[in-house]
Image (cartoon, rainbow, N blue to C red; front, side, top):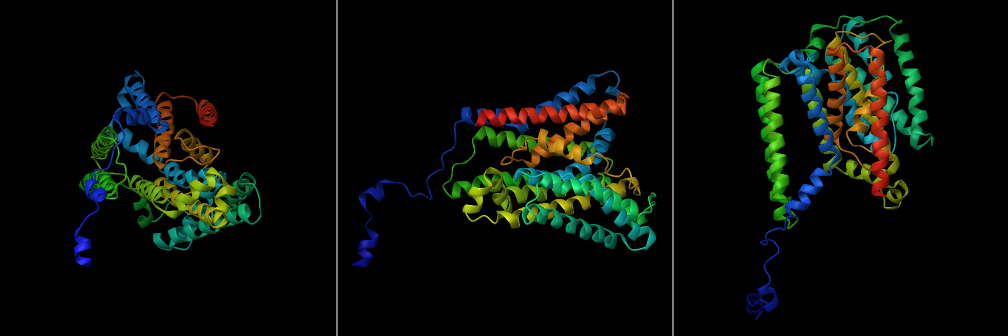
Length: 406
């Protein structure tokens, strides 16, 4: 009897297709295209391409700018901005700020250099020492903001003033160089064949992730992306892979590999982990997030600690690239550069909206402007003026966008 009943389907059930076998609906191409065109990150990519085109055509820069060597150097020069930018994106996402990262680069660089030069310790010990100091600094900032109820601006402004001074005290206000050979490898270049292999492997991994995501959504009966969105994503991954393989044909700088790993870590944390979901909830409405059970204090402390570790990571890269540390100048103005890159990349200063890819594009825009002005021999004082103007303009655009959405 039970077997007979189980073999007979209800008429309505027989008429309706099984949910698991039904093709998942996809949004219309027109709507998907409109969403893509409205993306701020895409607009910044357009700005970046326009800058590259202008510099490639400008008579003062066209011979030097559009070369594989120049693009390779450009991506290495922004490595510190990108690495710290990953942490700063999360900090700004939750409505915070960290003004101490420039001084943190100086302090962690001094710690690593002293362990290497004065105490003759291997590079991995020097790096762990710098990371340990920066982790404690990040925890301190998180505790000041959460337990001490201090505004993030004030809590990190104290670090902005103190950490560089501490670096000067530890180094006796002198430059520390040269680093040992094992540490210098962090600022060297990878072999050409290895670099090409890394670029191709990263591109194939990106393509596989896009395809796997669509298969997973279809299997779960969720709405899949529009065909035009998938096609544009695959095209972008292929174009970036080919571009990277060309500009790193003589070898990829190790700082570029390290910043790429930091970006991958940030993207996973932001979109694939509980920490990222909590960060978006806190940035959207802190009180609502708390009432919903989000551990606001623990998440905030974790994000500031992560930013501290990434600051040490950037300090190590900077020390390797320059083969030493000058505590009075190391990381100078880097907090301005990082915040500028994050904001022009599309992360909202009011919290609740962030993108790691946008931060990378913002860093490239900032680095391109700096590179172009150097090639045109623009006075460094004017470069500061332009940087400040870019930050104000990006903040104004963010404010206007937020008002329109509201």
